[in-house]
Length: 584
Image 1 (cartoon, rainbow, N blue to C red):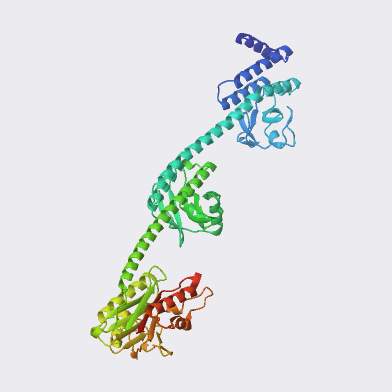
Image 2: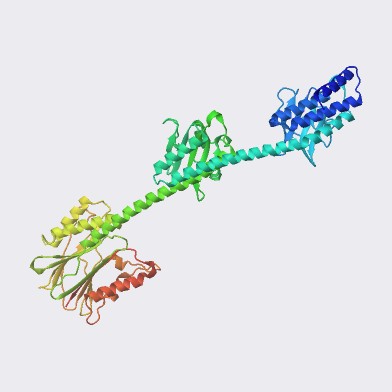
């Protein structure tokens, strides 16, 4: 139908209406024209909002109403205002409708949300059995009501509009999905880039700087701070965008806040009151992102307010959580790398210390006319605190030393090296008691108060077959006579290095043919069985009891083997050192 003809029909209809008459034929033609205009508008290339506004104006013009509104159902099933004309000021947003009308008619009095807007008629727009929109119209001009023709027209209009409106809803949903997917793709690209950067370095400071800069750039945040869990709580590790006096040095970790933070990133404004929220809000932080692994909090990212006050969306929280996992993994990897380097360095140092310590022990037992000598020292750990030595003296005499330094590890080995050097320098320069008293003063003045040494020192004169000894707090040596009785060498005094002055005594014993002297550390006597029982003196004596023709090496091997069998799977608890001297 051409435009001039439509205009002629509209002029004729307006003239009849001014005269108070509405000829049915012209009215039907007007309705058809309105439906044609509506269909053309709904099928146009206008934007969704422009189409809805134009469609509402067409309906209001045809029915001659001054008030109208179109509410469209959203994805959550609520009716949202999409187009309106003539509504009271301040009306916007959602329409709270309990029961949706099945057909055009006056508003249900039990639904005040529709009646309060001044609607005289409400028409549902359906697609199948589902209502996808509600059209509300105010009273008609000149007091005319809505008759059967008007409701029929509205039903025809609703039928025409249902498919385009539903298509618009689908398009809007797809647009939102595409927008969400675009955000996801952008976030994934960012996560991939930051992940590649994080895995490319093991420098903890570089990781911290990179993460903070990434967060600020992605969210367009004004400030960001990284906190790591330390002995005093969440301690500031790195920050940007804050003055020195703005960033809290520590964040108080409360029980409730800790539980909440372990679950997911939290918007600060949504937290209940507390010291943690107050500290974050005071520094203008809007988001707290936990760094957690294995159910334990290790740190947190505090993110400042976004540009233009934009809120953090659910997608932002998901991105923040994914970034937090990458950050946690990178920091943990850097920490393990640092610990590994420290362990390697420590192992190298221990290996060097062990090599130095082993170099202090005699390479072989000395040959002394009329005697057999065997000795062995075995550390329970990488390096130990036991020590033995053979020092040649004038007149073919031989000094024999066995000592046990308090403690274990590197400090004990250092003290043992000092004892070794001192005895090597002083042996034979004075009587044994005087020499050891001087050694005591040296140790007292140059070691920690808790450090001390138990020591047995003996000078063997092979010509006289006698040994002069001093026992400074050491396990009393075992003297097994060939005639069958046993002695313990106990003469001496207290341990060395614990007291400023000590008074030591010396004694002398004669060794007959077949006599055996064994000096051990407490690693032998106090060796524990798997049930916790000590090896003890009697078992030492039983292991040393010489058979016919058993020499010093055999006696030493018998003792060490017995101790190993006693400890079994429990293993050692202390260093084991033994020296065996046998007169032939």
